[in-house]
Length: 455
Image (cartoon, rainbow, N blue to C red; front, side, top):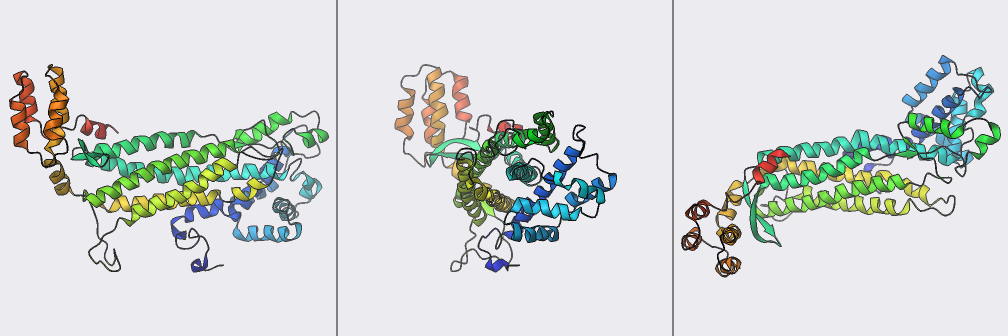
């Protein structure tokens, strides 16, 4: 075993503990485990077909052993498969030989062992294995982690729903919102993409060397192989793809990785915004005993979790976008360029998970700093230029925008008194004037509070 300090990839070294939930899924062990699962499931499905008389229904004993192999497949089992591969120089053929040896203690199996890998090309096994890996990662790792982020953000949105803050458009003071509403915006974006991630079909095929059931029909011309294979793929929990070359064309993978990439892009945007709010002082970060912010400046508490999240989300998207662009392309009926690229699925998803972990850690350190937020908005009475000129428009006051522009444009430090003096001289109904006189930057937040609470 290579020491973690000697690992080339930080996912297997420095950050291994952060992504260990993916190790059994996307490692070579995970791939071999799923190949064994698919081979055994295919063998069992063939034995259940009434027209394949040469392979009678399997005994309960063999079925139980096959289920045990799939459920308890170990690192030691994978190592034995690799020993076969050292001779065959073919990874899928090694799985076939290992299964034949593992079940050779059953006399009834020896008579029918050539139905292991029957009519299959390697890619029949591989595409289903990759699909099962992605299915497991989505269900067991990605969705729970992303839903945890949603829950944290919802709690923040509700807690901060009524904390007014000055917005910044183009980096300049702008119409107020609440901190909760700004977080709610992110939640809504994420929910849309997570729903797409949940619904994304994961496809599979098992139709032979070029997708036409050639070998299947040569042995059993009277079987409806497409229907049989469709049922088999669907029993694995996958969507059947009836039209392929030697390989399943990976379009669904591109769709899946694009969704994850969009989620990551939203979180890059969010990480940068939170980083900015920390910089402004809108958030403080909880201190941890023993931590150092800077090697030379003792006072610093750096927003490193959001910086780590942003950086790793970028790496993840670089890999995921390459997978999305490359995998659907294959010369003629098959080339091998997808094979080596597919081994990096776990890298793209691993960097995504690493970033999600950093983001959660950062969010859990945040404390709202209402003193700074209040000070910002209380010293920004120029923000009321918008509602005042809008009310003036309603009542036909001449050149309302231009009047407020002359009063406020470029003015920081606009006072409540100057705003009040301007409103008092307006020729508008008394109730409208009273409404504007009672308005403050803190109360000029529209439906922000309710929108935050509704998410």
